[in-house]
Image: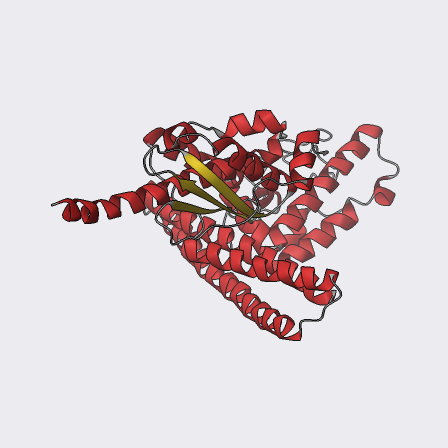
Length: 138
Length: 252
């Protein structure tokens, strides 16, 4: 099996590798894994509270080339999108973009999971923050 | 030539047909009457070795059957058979090797049984994602979050160690720390195998009850399957970690 040029490009020059402050109220963190291969992927987003736009995205993945490329692409794609737009990203979009072979589809699944988990974490933070702001407003 | 049934004393499976050569009832691999090799039947690996679909069995007996059959299926012994028979011998031989390799390994055996039970181990993550997508909920991670955290942290440390080495630096404290974690991981791996064997007993007990005529609900069956799937998933991670940690430590 050979990797596509796009996978190799993302693998050699991964975009947005790194991490952000997990405890920040604007940051959502998703840590996911694929039991099929034992990979782990962490994806973080920083969301503008007023516009719901994802302004920053970082990832760190331990896994095969396809998993790294899938998460690298995912961070590129979510940046500049609103949270709802980012939720519309499907794993098959990643499969197509990177020309992943069938045995590597689970890597794209992992990337979609990571986006959803990060957004879910961010949303949870916003909900738990709400009562505080309304209390202040009163 | 003796048949497998004579060697092992096991009854031939019910679905045996008549021998292509002499027409009498045949055993799975060789005819009981004339000893001719038979075309491979489309059976699962348990049936191939005349075993019930249970997870505990006598591995020494399996090994004995395997060597006995390997010997009988050896090309040298069948050099004078016609080309069709030689082809069947080859097919039987390949099936024998696959079946033996799968059944003798505790993990592969469990995976295989789950596969026969309709569990798609390769598809579980995708299935869960599709479910989460359609309900809009956050996907329930198949592996417990604390294990994922641990895997992630350890991988970070391994990466750090690799970086240090690239720069030609020595980091004895980190090596010691990772060495300690390696031992813990190996213990965990061992513990998971024990846990898996407990699940085997539960599974076999359930199958036995079913054979005794007590109905087993689909729910119970699913519960038992799920517990084994969970163990195999956790084990995948631990196995990868042990492998990666060993690699890094060996090169330091």
